[in-house]
Image (cartoon, rainbow, N blue to C red):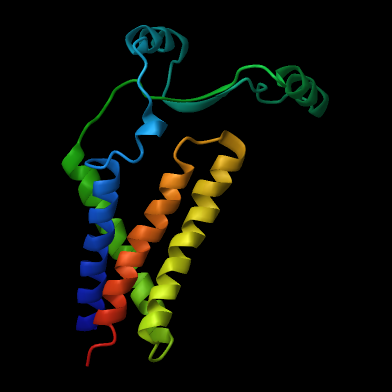
Length: 181
């Protein structure tokens, strides 16, 4: 149990540090957060249009629209501009709490991963690294790539780098740590 806990906490820290570097110092995700000098006027306008927090897809159909109405709107939208807006009435920058939550969820994830590796009996170093990379790729394909298919995200390749680098480094650690006597 001690080996699993230490492996999970250190693995979570490694994954967390990669995520931190990717989003902050390296600014790899910057293309998905592009700047516009019109941000103040856009935010002011949006605050007059939305009454509550939410994610809005434009254009879309109202609740209760018939299939015919939905299809008519979809056909009319082809070739025209569209947007996905995540609107919040108030920014809450509780960096410490958010980072703590991120680290806590990484610990939970790594506890699950270590449990999986323990169920394998005595996996080799290569098996642990390969399985860690597969876990990262499963997350990437299931979330980042699937979202990109529909919403053409701007940081798809960076998410792939995050999956490979973060889970590769974590796999190196776990491959060494979990195989120690």
